[in-house]
Amino acid sequence: MKTVKTDVVIVGGGAAGCFAALELHRKGIACVVVCKGLVGKSGASIFAGNLVLSGQVLGNTPEQARNTGEFLVKYHNQFLIDQHWARRCGAWVESEYYAELERAGLYFRRDAEGNVVTSPGKIRSVAANVQGNSGVPFMDLRRKQLARAGIPTIEETAVTALLHGRDGRVRGVFGLSVLTGEPIVVQGQSVILATGYSDRLHSRSTGTREMSADGLAMAWRAGADLLNLEMQWWHTNDVAHPPSWERMQIYPNPILGSPKSARMVNAAGEEFFNQQDDDPMAFGPYTVQLKALVKQVRAGKASYSGGYFAGFNHMNPAEVNAYTTYGKPYYQLGLDPAKDLLETAVTAHYRQGGVRVDTATMKTSVPGLFVAGGLGGHSNGLIALATFDGKTVAEGVADELGFVAVADLNDRDIQAETYRLEKLRQSDGDGESPFAIKEKIRGAMWNGAGVEKSAATLEEALANLRRIREFDLPAMRLKNRTKIANYEWLDAIDVHNMIDAAELVVHSSLERRESRGPFIRTDFPDTDNLDWLAANVMVKTENGFRFERVPYETPYFQPGFDRRDNMLVAW
Image (tube, rainbow, N blue to C red; front, side, top):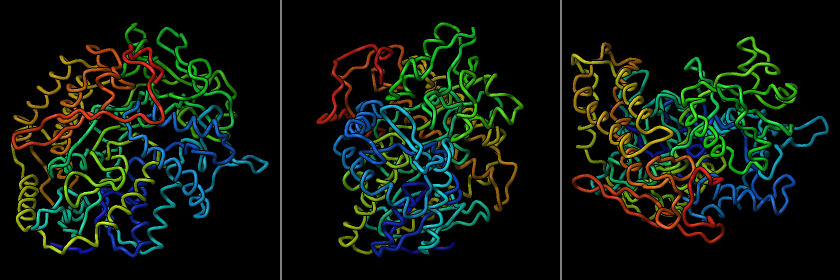
């Protein structure tokens, strides 16, 4: 078994993990980045469509700067956010983030006169290089920065367990090389989990195959507090067919260089969402789109799996092609975006909730364990926010390292994980494959914990997940027993993380007895700011878990009402 020693172990090669590594390197602290895929080439960060302008960057007025803050707190997080953290983050993004990116060579799209092209409305964004694809050049840049700095990376290696020192502190990780099947232990003084916002827990999801909620499951097993897991965000306009295209969005948000954007049409041919009519200032487009779709589904004119359409046939396609990638699926299918609409469907996007952290340091409730970016439950989406977390966690880890004594890993953790993984590889039951069981888990979540849910559907989801855990997992069968490039083995490892995370999400959904933004419960239709403007905290106990409700402070922005039907709330 290979062992690598360093000061800090970073799990995840997206925006948060890469920037944390760069910041630690600048401080002279050694780190190693371990990535399930390829650093800068996999995960959620590469799917960033654009970069939201914060503060008074690139001509933003003071009013637009305040609008961006309101957007983040109210429309993007439904007030389930530390507003002091949001203010610190916004100030850093304005003063440091964009300047650092341009110095590093990231190109923001400009027009023929050399002016940076922005989207219209009170909330403006820019693209690098084109809208819909900004995450790719952004993460290519981060990958190159890590390489130039000489920061070690261990790629295509699935981290399967957090390892404790003999003092009880989290001090390392157990990994498995996807290509060779060989185990590796990476030991440090602290561990940063930066495994991202997205997880593939529903039948339709923007998450890629490797996103199986690993960070969430491992943090929970280590004893970390979780919060707001029920707050799942959804895309309303991803291509319905084929399934491999479900991450391709017919984006109905404002687009660069045009006053128009995609519109949505129901099965009866009636337009039911147009950004310019329904949310002209683009404050809360995702939630506004979702609620518009919910009304169509309830009226029998659409379904969450399709039966409605989106497109740009009300505008000049040249405006779509100039600065965006959104015409691409039409041309690939031999369609004309000036005439044709595409059938679209809902996909699960980011999870707003996650691991509970101290937002000043990114410490979790477990000694030695830090979390950065989307795995934390303190904010939803946006690549700039994940990057700010990378900066913050590097400072938090650096401040603590000088006070941490050296300690060896607990050998029992390593032995137990080695045995667990080998037992999975030898699974020889008479049941289904790991891939089939993954699909069962996703189906249970889609049917019982999808866009609209109730106590009855959530209890049904729990019952289905329990049956999978009780009957399908013990009977799981692997046809491939080799170690080399055994993706069936990786699926078997993923299954256990997925079912653990899925059950936690459903329990949290049952606990939040209201509807809020994209979280819609038919049995509790009101947004309840009297009782539920609060973090829904899940604390592990010896025999299970308990919930704690921790109210959020609202020093800068307030909801303005006590209770209201969520379908009538703009955010």
